[in-house]
View 1 (cartoon, rainbow, N blue to C red):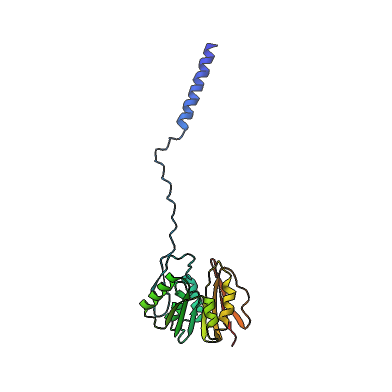
View 2 (view 1 turned 120 degrees about the vertical axis):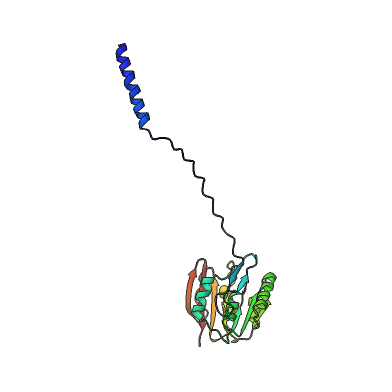
Length: 223
């Protein structure tokens, strides 16, 4: 009986030795450190004009809550719709912010451009930008856009830009106010966070696109 136990023990030891020799060697390479998390960059502190006389000129973007400059790609699309030569046009940028849309129009030859905003820092920044560019045909005013349009003479503008704050329902109301200011065949560009709907009576929808959270619509007054 003792000899049988010895043989069994020997077989067990041999099996354990074979298993140990077959096991892969432990890795001696150090563990890789975890990848650092990407930190999102803050909004840009400046944008650039993309066409015309002042192409590539920088416009500061002040740290004002709710400020949302029209992206480069959308401005490029808009002026592909309108054309690159706005010589002689009379233009209103009613919720101007940085003034990018109105200054793009002036850069392309618009004869007169009015930039409106209620924020004192934005108004000051737009005045500084217009002065730096030598934009003699650009006027900057601190004003309520709806009130200003209600006092403006009818049929005196070729183009109106409307980009009211997204957290309001001003887009269609502003479009109604702007419509009376347009000459026959004049243009109205509206930016909003959702489709505005049918254009006011007497206007025709010509173009529409969505870029991210922005819905852009271009309407034309009847001739």
